[in-house]
Image 1 (cartoon, rainbow, N blue to C red):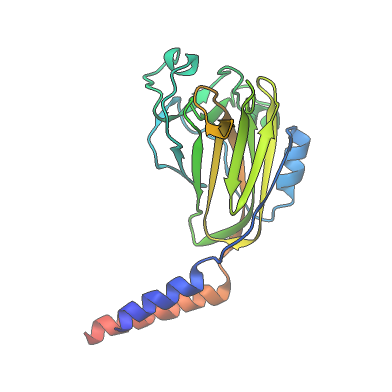
Image 2 (spheres, rainbow, N blue to C red):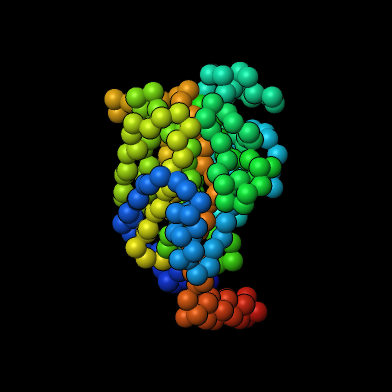
Length: 240
């Protein structure tokens, strides 16, 4: 009984309550990105520059969480003209310029070799489950999106009860996405996908890049509780 009670109390104390996020979308520039990220005290970042070009399985794990396709099978030039094995059923790590999808990292570093990004690969979109290692919580996220909302489609961004539609952008347009959760949270799901007439679309891809998560250490009181409950569990095992 002691063990199950311990786990129940721990989950109640550590789990983040429901939250209402706000989403802001603006034009990307190195200056605007750096100003937004510069206001974060502790940043966990991901620019995909340490990866090689390839398909990635659902559940692709990074230091800012995991990524998966929102479904569907891409069949456009992005897939058929890829220089690696690509069946259009998964997200992909890409480099260079893929039909207007590009990395924004080189604009931030000045290094033209910094050209990797995560591509929706003409699937219905990207599902990003945000979670940080080291018992860290977070309250804000900044990232970039390129080549979204063309061909009459709208990019729908959904998270924490908020929905934001990006519409009427041209080929290769770069956007800065800022999400504020309004409080510290331990996890969040962000879904991005193209829609037209309220239906999800394939074969109109986009990229995401240069993710910055504003990390907040777990409160000392929660860490103390975890340590104390861990000690109680150990004592229970010894007595058992």
